[in-house]
Amino acid sequence: MNILAWVVLGLLAGALAKAIYPGTQGGGILSTMVLGIVGAVLGGTITTFWQTGTLQLASASLSLPGLLVAILGAMLAIFLWGLLTHRAA
Image (cartoon, rainbow, N blue to C red; front, side, top):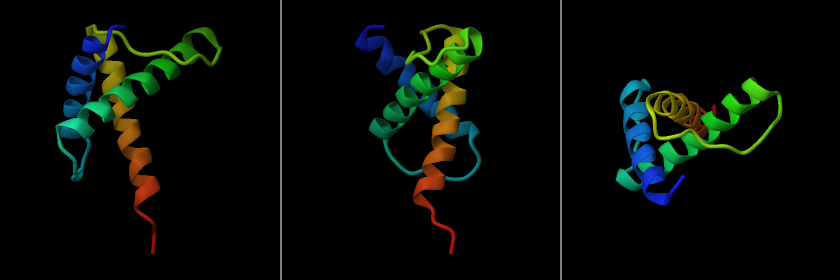
């Protein structure tokens, strides 16, 4: 996938994941894009694993199913980031 498509997918997926995920997440547009790109890679890798049974680094494509996978991956990334940064007292 070319770089512009990654940026567009990352921006869309990150923004929608932040809007859907409960709670508040900080960060600006750059962190939203990074979150969306990480979500696209995470979601694409998990989807590829479920489909083929092999663990391959993959990314979601710039399509409606790819966007949905990227949003779910970005929501998973938000959850994992929250686990890493918020320590229980």
